[in-house]
Image 1: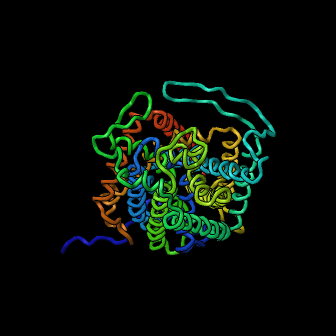
Image 2: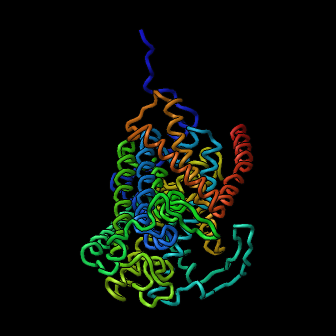
Length: 519
C-alpha cells in the first residue's frame, strides 16, 4: 500500500496561535465588503496625478499605456497568486503571516516593521494631506503655507543622488485637516469592523462611479480633435520602438524596456495596497472563497478603470505641451499644472466646473482610501503583537467591539507624527523599492510552501502556477535592478530602513522569549 497523505497536517505553533487569535475577532466582512476594501485601498489620488510624470519619462502615448499595462499585469498576477496564500492561511496579518510561515519570523517582522514605520502610515499621511490639499480648492484658508505652529525648517541636504531634509516641520491648516481625518477614521474603526466596512463600501462605490463616469464621458463625449490627432493619428507609437533611447536626466539615455521599468514607480504606487484585504482575513466570512474572489475582482476592476482613464487623458489632451502654456490644452499631459492631469482633463472637458468636480472626486477617493488603509493596517501590528514581536498591549481587543483598538491608536499617533514632520513624502519615495522586494519574497514563499507543505489544504490554487508567478518574480526583479542602477534615490534609503529592522527583531524576539518563559 502507498503512503497515505494526511489532509490535515499538524499545525505549527504560530498557526495554532493564529487560530486562537482569529477566533477572538468578529467575522463581519462579506464578499462585497472585502472587494470594496481591495478597490478602496487601491484608488487614492495617484491615478489623477502620476500619468504626467510617466509621460515626461516615456515621451510616447503607447509607452504611457504600456506602463499601466505592466502595472496591471503585475497587480493582477500578484492578486491571483496571493489568493492561494490567503485561502490557505486566512489569518489576521495577511502578508506578514505568509512571509513568516514561508521564509521565517525575521522576514515577516521586517515586512511588518517597514509597514508600520513607512509603507502604511506614510501612505495614510500622504493621502490625508492630499485630502487637505484638495479641500483647499473650496476653502482657501486650508493651505500648507497657513501655519498654526511652525516649528522648524529642515534644510536641504544632498548625499550623492539622495536628497534629505528640505522639510517644514509643524502644524499648518492643510496637515491639520489630514490629522483630523486620520483621528476621526481611527476612532470610528474602533466601533466594529462592520462600521468601518460600511464607510468603506459607501466611499468606494462613490469613487468607482466617479472613475467610471470619467472614463465613459471622456471616451465618448469629451474627445478633443487636436489631442486625438496628436496622440493617435500616426503618433501613438512614437518613441516606442525597442531601439529607441530615452533621456531620464543627468545625461543618462536608456532603452525603451528600461524606461518602462523606471516609470513603474508612479503607476505601481497608484495601484498598490491591493493586498490590504489579506490583513483583515481573520474578519472575512468564508475567507477561503471570498479572499481570492475579492482580490481577483477588485484588482481587475480597478486596473481596467486606470487604463481607461489614461486613454481618456490621451483623448482630451496632447501628450506633449508647453510648460509655459496658459491653457490646459497648451500645457498638455506632460506639463499639467502641479501634475494634476485629472483636473486638467476635466477642466478641458467641462470648464471651471470640471476642476471643482474633480476636486470632489479626489476628496471622496482620499477619504475612502484612508479608511481602508487605517482599518487593514492595524490588523498587521495586532498579529505581530500576538507573536510577541510588537508592543504587547497592541494585541488587546476592545472588550465590546472586538477590534484591535490599541493597534489603531498606535498607528494613528505615528501617522500624525509623520504629518507634522513633513517627512512622509520622502519616506514613500524611499520605500517603493522595498515594497516590491516584499512582493517578490512573498511570491517566492508561494513556491516554498508548495514544496514544504504539499499536503496543506488549498481551497484555491494560484492561476497559471508556476509560469505566471515566475514571470512576476523575474519582471519585478528586473524593475528593482533598474531602479537600483538608475534611481538610487528610490532604493538605498528604503533598504536601509528595512535593514534597521534586523537588530530590532532580535531584541524584540529575545524580550518576547523572556516574557514567554516567565509565563
